[in-house]
Image (cartoon, rainbow, N blue to C red; front, top):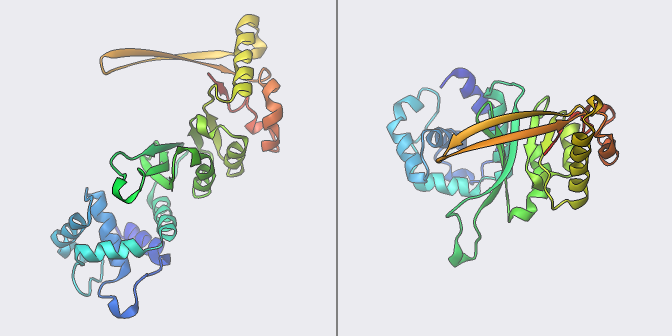
Length: 276
Protein backbone atom coordinates (compact mmCIF):
# COMPACT_ATOMS: atom_id res chain seq x y z
CA UNK A 1 0.00 0.00 0.00
CA UNK A 2 1.43 3.38 -0.98
CA UNK A 3 1.88 6.09 1.71
CA UNK A 4 -0.69 8.28 -0.07
CA UNK A 5 -3.38 5.60 0.06
CA UNK A 6 -2.49 4.68 3.65
CA UNK A 7 -2.85 8.33 4.67
CA UNK A 8 -6.09 8.67 2.71
CA UNK A 9 -7.59 5.62 4.43
CA UNK A 10 -6.54 6.75 7.89
CA UNK A 11 -7.81 10.30 7.47
CA UNK A 12 -11.02 9.35 5.66
CA UNK A 13 -12.20 6.78 8.22
CA UNK A 14 -11.05 8.70 11.30
CA UNK A 15 -14.55 10.22 11.55
CA UNK A 16 -16.25 6.82 12.02
CA UNK A 17 -17.33 6.47 15.64
CA UNK A 18 -16.20 3.35 17.48
CA UNK A 19 -19.38 1.58 18.69
CA UNK A 20 -17.56 -0.47 21.37
CA UNK A 21 -17.11 0.33 25.03
CA UNK A 22 -13.52 1.06 26.03
CA UNK A 23 -12.80 -2.13 28.00
CA UNK A 24 -13.73 -4.35 25.03
CA UNK A 25 -11.35 -2.73 22.52
CA UNK A 26 -8.71 -5.37 21.91
CA UNK A 27 -8.20 -4.14 18.33
CA UNK A 28 -8.09 -0.67 16.83
CA UNK A 29 -11.18 0.28 14.82
CA UNK A 30 -9.06 1.69 12.00
CA UNK A 31 -7.13 -1.59 11.76
CA UNK A 32 -10.39 -3.52 11.48
CA UNK A 33 -11.70 -1.22 8.75
CA UNK A 34 -8.51 -1.22 6.67
CA UNK A 35 -8.11 -5.00 6.85
CA UNK A 36 -11.72 -5.44 5.77
CA UNK A 37 -11.38 -3.08 2.81
CA UNK A 38 -8.21 -4.84 1.68
CA UNK A 39 -9.85 -8.24 2.02
CA UNK A 40 -12.93 -7.25 0.02
CA UNK A 41 -10.75 -5.78 -2.74
CA UNK A 42 -8.95 -9.14 -2.88
CA UNK A 43 -12.23 -11.05 -3.19
CA UNK A 44 -13.33 -11.90 0.37
CA UNK A 45 -17.11 -12.15 0.60
CA UNK A 46 -17.63 -13.15 4.25
CA UNK A 47 -16.04 -12.50 7.64
CA UNK A 48 -14.13 -15.78 7.61
CA UNK A 49 -12.51 -14.69 4.35
CA UNK A 50 -11.67 -11.29 5.85
CA UNK A 51 -9.98 -12.91 8.86
CA UNK A 52 -8.08 -15.32 6.59
CA UNK A 53 -6.86 -12.39 4.50
CA UNK A 54 -5.61 -10.68 7.67
CA UNK A 55 -3.81 -13.80 8.89
CA UNK A 56 -2.14 -14.53 5.55
CA UNK A 57 -0.92 -10.92 5.15
CA UNK A 58 -0.09 -10.31 8.82
CA UNK A 59 3.57 -9.47 8.22
CA UNK A 60 2.71 -6.95 5.50
CA UNK A 61 -0.11 -5.38 7.50
CA UNK A 62 2.27 -4.80 10.42
CA UNK A 63 4.30 -2.42 8.26
CA UNK A 64 1.53 0.21 8.40
CA UNK A 65 -1.04 -0.93 11.01
CA UNK A 66 -0.63 -1.10 14.78
CA UNK A 67 -2.28 -4.51 15.37
CA UNK A 68 -1.71 -4.48 19.17
CA UNK A 69 -3.30 -7.94 19.57
CA UNK A 70 -2.73 -9.45 16.17
CA UNK A 71 -5.46 -10.10 13.63
CA UNK A 72 -9.07 -9.98 14.91
CA UNK A 73 -11.22 -13.10 14.65
CA UNK A 74 -13.99 -13.35 12.09
CA UNK A 75 -16.53 -12.92 14.88
CA UNK A 76 -14.91 -9.65 15.90
CA UNK A 77 -15.03 -8.30 12.34
CA UNK A 78 -18.69 -9.22 12.11
CA UNK A 79 -19.70 -7.75 15.47
CA UNK A 80 -17.91 -4.46 14.90
CA UNK A 81 -19.32 -3.91 11.41
CA UNK A 82 -22.81 -4.83 12.59
CA UNK A 83 -22.66 -1.87 14.99
CA UNK A 84 -20.82 0.75 12.92
CA UNK A 85 -22.96 3.71 11.84
CA UNK A 86 -23.64 2.92 8.13
CA UNK A 87 -24.09 6.58 7.13
CA UNK A 88 -20.73 7.52 8.67
CA UNK A 89 -19.04 4.59 6.97
CA UNK A 90 -20.54 5.45 3.58
CA UNK A 91 -19.48 9.09 3.83
CA UNK A 92 -15.95 8.05 4.84
CA UNK A 93 -15.72 5.46 2.08
CA UNK A 94 -16.81 7.99 -0.52
CA UNK A 95 -14.28 10.50 0.82
CA UNK A 96 -11.53 7.89 0.46
CA UNK A 97 -12.55 6.98 -3.10
CA UNK A 98 -12.54 10.64 -4.11
CA UNK A 99 -9.13 11.13 -2.49
CA UNK A 100 -7.40 8.32 -4.39
CA UNK A 101 -9.19 8.29 -7.73
CA UNK A 102 -7.95 10.30 -10.67
CA UNK A 103 -10.36 13.23 -11.07
CA UNK A 104 -11.68 13.34 -14.61
CA UNK A 105 -14.76 14.38 -16.48
CA UNK A 106 -16.77 11.21 -16.55
CA UNK A 107 -20.10 9.59 -17.24
CA UNK A 108 -21.81 8.67 -13.98
CA UNK A 109 -24.53 6.08 -14.49
CA UNK A 110 -27.20 5.90 -11.77
CA UNK A 111 -29.27 2.76 -11.71
CA UNK A 112 -31.23 0.58 -9.33
CA UNK A 113 -30.59 -3.14 -8.97
CA UNK A 114 -32.25 -5.86 -6.93
CA UNK A 115 -29.72 -8.36 -5.60
CA UNK A 116 -30.75 -11.93 -6.29
CA UNK A 117 -30.68 -14.24 -3.31
CA UNK A 118 -30.58 -11.40 -0.79
CA UNK A 119 -34.08 -12.01 0.53
CA UNK A 120 -34.76 -13.67 3.88
CA UNK A 121 -38.30 -15.02 3.62
CA UNK A 122 -38.39 -16.78 7.03
CA UNK A 123 -37.75 -13.41 8.69
CA UNK A 124 -40.01 -11.45 6.36
CA UNK A 125 -37.19 -9.56 4.60
CA UNK A 126 -37.44 -8.74 0.91
CA UNK A 127 -34.51 -8.79 -1.51
CA UNK A 128 -32.02 -5.94 -1.18
CA UNK A 129 -32.58 -3.15 -3.72
CA UNK A 130 -29.75 -0.65 -4.18
CA UNK A 131 -29.53 2.60 -6.10
CA UNK A 132 -25.89 3.08 -7.05
CA UNK A 133 -23.69 5.53 -8.94
CA UNK A 134 -21.14 3.99 -11.30
CA UNK A 135 -18.22 6.03 -12.69
CA UNK A 136 -17.82 4.54 -16.15
CA UNK A 137 -14.27 5.67 -16.92
CA UNK A 138 -12.86 5.12 -13.44
CA UNK A 139 -14.83 1.84 -13.17
CA UNK A 140 -15.79 2.58 -9.57
CA UNK A 141 -19.00 2.50 -7.58
CA UNK A 142 -19.00 6.01 -6.12
CA UNK A 143 -21.92 5.49 -3.77
CA UNK A 144 -25.07 3.51 -3.16
CA UNK A 145 -28.26 3.74 -1.11
CA UNK A 146 -30.53 0.89 -0.10
CA UNK A 147 -34.26 1.34 -0.72
CA UNK A 148 -37.24 -0.81 0.15
CA UNK A 149 -38.31 -1.31 -3.45
CA UNK A 150 -37.98 0.14 -6.95
CA UNK A 151 -40.73 2.71 -6.36
CA UNK A 152 -38.53 4.49 -3.80
CA UNK A 153 -35.73 5.18 -6.31
CA UNK A 154 -37.12 8.67 -7.02
CA UNK A 155 -36.51 9.75 -3.41
CA UNK A 156 -33.16 7.94 -3.15
CA UNK A 157 -31.60 9.44 -6.30
CA UNK A 158 -31.39 13.04 -4.93
CA UNK A 159 -29.84 11.69 -1.73
CA UNK A 160 -27.23 9.85 -3.76
CA UNK A 161 -26.52 12.92 -5.90
CA UNK A 162 -25.79 14.90 -2.73
CA UNK A 163 -22.90 12.52 -2.01
CA UNK A 164 -21.20 12.98 -5.38
CA UNK A 165 -18.87 15.46 -7.03
CA UNK A 166 -20.71 16.06 -10.31
CA UNK A 167 -18.65 18.95 -11.68
CA UNK A 168 -18.53 18.69 -15.49
CA UNK A 169 -19.66 15.06 -15.36
CA UNK A 170 -22.63 13.70 -17.29
CA UNK A 171 -25.19 11.83 -15.20
CA UNK A 172 -27.29 9.21 -16.96
CA UNK A 173 -30.48 7.87 -15.36
CA UNK A 174 -33.23 5.61 -16.66
CA UNK A 175 -36.85 6.68 -17.03
CA UNK A 176 -37.47 6.45 -13.27
CA UNK A 177 -35.26 9.52 -12.83
CA UNK A 178 -36.80 11.67 -15.56
CA UNK A 179 -37.97 14.31 -13.09
CA UNK A 180 -37.49 18.09 -13.17
CA UNK A 181 -36.36 18.08 -9.52
CA UNK A 182 -33.65 15.50 -10.24
CA UNK A 183 -32.46 17.45 -13.29
CA UNK A 184 -32.33 20.59 -11.15
CA UNK A 185 -30.26 18.80 -8.51
CA UNK A 186 -27.71 17.72 -11.13
CA UNK A 187 -27.46 21.24 -12.55
CA UNK A 188 -27.13 22.73 -9.05
CA UNK A 189 -24.12 20.48 -8.52
CA UNK A 190 -22.58 21.65 -11.84
CA UNK A 191 -23.25 18.45 -13.75
CA UNK A 192 -24.96 17.62 -17.03
CA UNK A 193 -27.66 15.03 -17.55
CA UNK A 194 -29.07 12.53 -20.03
CA UNK A 195 -32.44 11.24 -18.87
CA UNK A 196 -34.40 8.41 -20.45
CA UNK A 197 -38.04 9.09 -21.32
CA UNK A 198 -40.75 6.46 -21.72
CA UNK A 199 -44.43 6.45 -22.48
CA UNK A 200 -45.49 6.35 -18.82
CA UNK A 201 -44.93 10.14 -18.85
CA UNK A 202 -47.60 10.47 -21.50
CA UNK A 203 -47.65 14.23 -22.09
CA UNK A 204 -43.89 14.77 -22.20
CA UNK A 205 -43.38 11.64 -24.29
CA UNK A 206 -46.04 12.77 -26.78
CA UNK A 207 -44.46 16.24 -27.05
CA UNK A 208 -41.01 14.79 -27.72
CA UNK A 209 -42.41 12.36 -30.27
CA UNK A 210 -44.16 15.26 -32.02
CA UNK A 211 -40.86 17.17 -32.20
CA UNK A 212 -39.19 14.34 -34.08
CA UNK A 213 -42.18 13.84 -36.35
CA UNK A 214 -42.16 17.55 -37.27
CA UNK A 215 -38.40 17.60 -37.71
CA UNK A 216 -38.46 14.69 -40.15
CA UNK A 217 -41.33 16.24 -42.08
CA UNK A 218 -39.81 19.73 -42.27
CA UNK A 219 -36.25 18.66 -43.12
CA UNK A 220 -35.14 22.19 -42.37
CA UNK A 221 -31.59 23.04 -41.19
CA UNK A 222 -32.82 25.10 -38.23
CA UNK A 223 -34.11 21.94 -36.58
CA UNK A 224 -30.52 20.77 -36.25
CA UNK A 225 -31.55 17.12 -36.43
CA UNK A 226 -28.65 14.67 -36.64
CA UNK A 227 -28.28 10.94 -36.19
CA UNK A 228 -25.65 8.34 -35.45
CA UNK A 229 -25.86 4.58 -35.97
CA UNK A 230 -23.97 1.89 -34.07
CA UNK A 231 -23.94 -1.86 -34.64
CA UNK A 232 -23.04 -4.36 -31.93
CA UNK A 233 -22.98 -8.14 -31.83
CA UNK A 234 -23.28 -10.72 -29.09
CA UNK A 235 -25.31 -13.68 -27.81
CA UNK A 236 -25.91 -14.85 -31.37
CA UNK A 237 -27.44 -11.67 -32.68
CA UNK A 238 -26.48 -8.35 -34.29
CA UNK A 239 -28.16 -5.17 -33.05
CA UNK A 240 -28.24 -1.90 -34.97
CA UNK A 241 -29.26 1.20 -33.03
CA UNK A 242 -29.81 4.66 -34.49
CA UNK A 243 -30.00 7.70 -32.22
CA UNK A 244 -31.60 10.91 -33.47
CA UNK A 245 -30.77 14.24 -31.83
CA UNK A 246 -32.59 17.56 -32.10
CA UNK A 247 -30.96 20.79 -30.93
CA UNK A 248 -32.13 24.44 -30.71
CA UNK A 249 -34.47 25.96 -31.65
CA UNK A 250 -36.79 22.98 -32.11
CA UNK A 251 -36.73 22.02 -28.45
CA UNK A 252 -37.85 25.48 -27.34
CA UNK A 253 -41.36 24.03 -27.40
CA UNK A 254 -40.39 21.80 -24.48
CA UNK A 255 -38.11 24.20 -22.64
CA UNK A 256 -40.81 26.08 -20.74
CA UNK A 257 -41.33 23.45 -18.06
CA UNK A 258 -37.57 22.83 -17.71
CA UNK A 259 -36.34 26.41 -18.12
CA UNK A 260 -36.46 27.36 -14.41
CA UNK A 261 -33.78 24.77 -13.69
CA UNK A 262 -30.86 27.10 -14.43
CA UNK A 263 -30.04 30.75 -14.79
CA UNK A 264 -28.54 30.30 -18.25
CA UNK A 265 -29.34 28.34 -21.36
CA UNK A 266 -26.70 25.71 -20.55
CA UNK A 267 -29.21 23.21 -19.21
CA UNK A 268 -32.04 23.79 -21.64
CA UNK A 269 -33.31 20.61 -23.19
CA UNK A 270 -31.69 21.58 -26.45
CA UNK A 271 -28.23 21.72 -24.90
CA UNK A 272 -28.78 18.46 -23.05
CA UNK A 273 -30.11 16.82 -26.25
CA UNK A 274 -33.41 14.99 -26.40
CA UNK A 275 -32.92 11.34 -27.30
CA UNK A 276 -35.37 8.91 -28.76
